[in-house]
Image 1 (cartoon, rainbow, N blue to C red):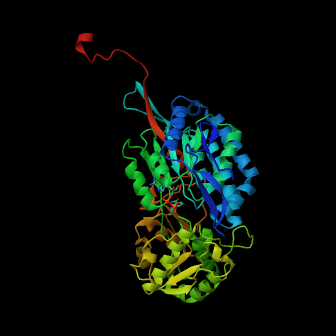
Image 2: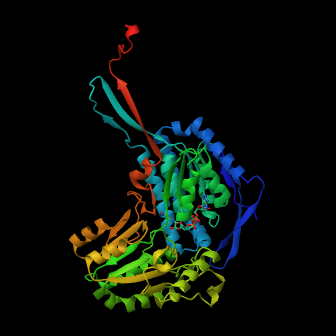
Image 3: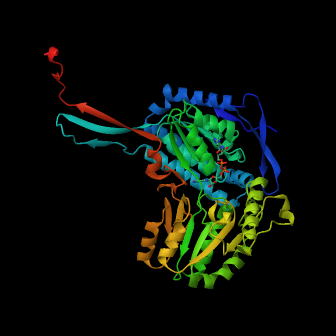
Length: 492
Ligand code: NAD
């Protein structure tokens, strides 16, 4: 089996000591392939290639329309290969094929969005208090960017990182999760086909530590963009202090969905399920805490449990599957551990909870699981489970809903459902979260910023903010009538 290779300085290369790591199909834990397994020296070589390309190479100096042309071409190639991308992400991550198809389309759109933005105005001019002077700002690329991504959206997270960074003229090193390396290989084959200058963009396979940690600590890296767990984010921030590199962190969440009693029960049931069970709940903004106004809870809870139990759980490649397996056996065990913990502390299990004993036993399946009556200090209530586990609570008043929704150290996302427009605005403006929805959930657009409050991280991806995050602002001030200053008396 030929391993997937790193891409460094415009060439596909194995890691120096030629070690490899298997990657698996979580639907049955069979081996899909091997990826080369880098170490800190490979990371240093990738950084050196990016550094040279940034400091001496053509990419940062390439006119924006030419950078845009390459990214548009890449988007076209991604679209042409969308079926293969979705097949790889479904097989390697486990997600249902229809979700992986959605990711592939969104990936092409993300490259197009930032290709377009590359050529738009980014500077400003300033009127100064001295009429002989004028000042303007320009935006310049940050430099060498280490981009570390998780396993839940293997292709799409690569796009969220690479598209704005390359559009702005940075040189990049992408490190995918060691669990889901497959789609990145195809992406870099297409990058190679488009023909970026050598060193403009590298792919580096390997473990978080030593490879991701080497990028975070390297004083030759100017920025780390990270999506992943909160504990890892904290380590990256600490490692980044040496050269005070720029850091953006997109971390976990425990996002609330608040539904008032005026919501159509059909809408309430479907969005509650969609909020937590799309992507098997392995979604950073998953709506894992559901707050129902008491009257609505009485109406929909039995329906919610029955509908969750009917979700078709199976291998993602099976087009009838609505929920796939979790990414790994270890993660499945972690999620089942949370569920067991919830039962032990006396939460009421409405549905789910047990892993499957049928043909799905070889895979990492966890059924849609719903708890009510969860003690407020229970781990399932407070911690990010990152799996198909919903905790439901009720409320009587708007104030109570807001207080409970905000009672979490996280602040990635949140939503309110109600037909009362004023109430929707009141509630949403008080939610302490970076991504919010009224009467919908999950839908994410390349045009608007994405990122968290509180322990869900900082910095924004997507939209113009996501482009700005890959730039430094430079002030350029000009004297319009230069003449001797007369500052030093001896100069006359
Ligand atoms: P993780 O933090 O374990 O890994 C994420 C990436 O970081 C992987 O590439 C991993 O190899 C790397 N890594 C691990 N240790 C490292 C270290 N010490 N230094 C540098 N890099 C290191 O997370 P995961 O288990 O892959 O993903 C799940 C987590 O990601 C969840 O907590 C979820 O909330 C979060 N997530 C957040 C978002 C978001 O947009 N906010 C999106 C997706 C996932």
